Image 1 (tube, one colour):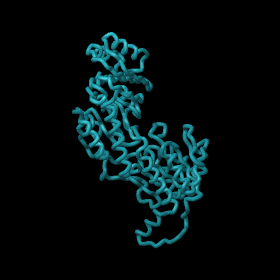
Image 2 (cartoon, rainbow, N blue to C red):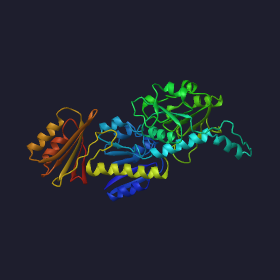
Image 3 (cartoon, rainbow, N blue to C red):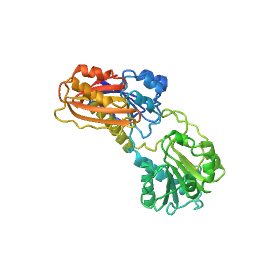
Image 4 (cartoon, rainbow, N blue to C red):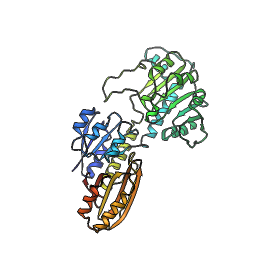
Length: 410
């Protein structure tokens, strides 16, 4: 029986999906550090994580039996993807499942900060009745600047416009503007025009510390700042300075450069105690609906990979799906180095040993190639041995029909 190690409490529905396909699940509630993960991962073919667990090159090299990793979240920057590819480990994530949850939190924070609800709430809890319109505004007619116009940024754009906001955006890639949203040529231009700036960038290293003292100074006096993307994109000390000086009227931060590993651990930040700041513990996508969708989506992707060799929506391997014919008896899934002539060698080997190919697909992704081949005849053991020993073979799996997998690792 295959085994899956799940960390950081992905939704329980994932367990049911794995169990349905005879995959045993072992859970740990929190993240594991590198040494702990190396030890715990032994004997597991599948690993499921969220954002706190670091799957390093050392972890991967110490566990050559690992076949697939599921990130039950959007980001995959916590995984050494180059090493995973080099070992033939398929990585899947959930790029869309929590989009709505993040967007709704952003909208809620935009309204709360614009109406100064956090300040009013804080004073009333201290017994101070501060009934005043001073500093409170409607969001209608105000300009929202979105940095990162991907899945989350575009949906935020649509909902913000529905509230009567003007939307401008900046992205390093050319993006189709939705509704009346206007693209900006530079991030600086966006910062100078926006009443609210909301970050929705990915975890690429190029985004590290992209927002600091200079960027806050470019923002309009009295504007608001929201970061629901990645903790390492913002200089927190610079944000504190901008808030304490009064240049910014408020901020909402859901992600931090350093975060506790599990619920209940202590948390410290220079932003703590500021009544014009909303702090949330990395819960942008943490609604019950989003976690349910993520749990089901990622678990199904992992099961599909194990049962059919499908890499649809894998973040590090060529995305391939081969529909089997009724006559298919075996499926050969070969992850290999992207070297010219590999597929020709594979097909020549099958031909020389009398195997009949009735379906095949090949894809490449950078230095990695992936070929799925369906065989309708008996599968010659000699042919598999030759393919297994090819210099460019990374990982070879043989599936008896595309639903019952027998693993062979190079």
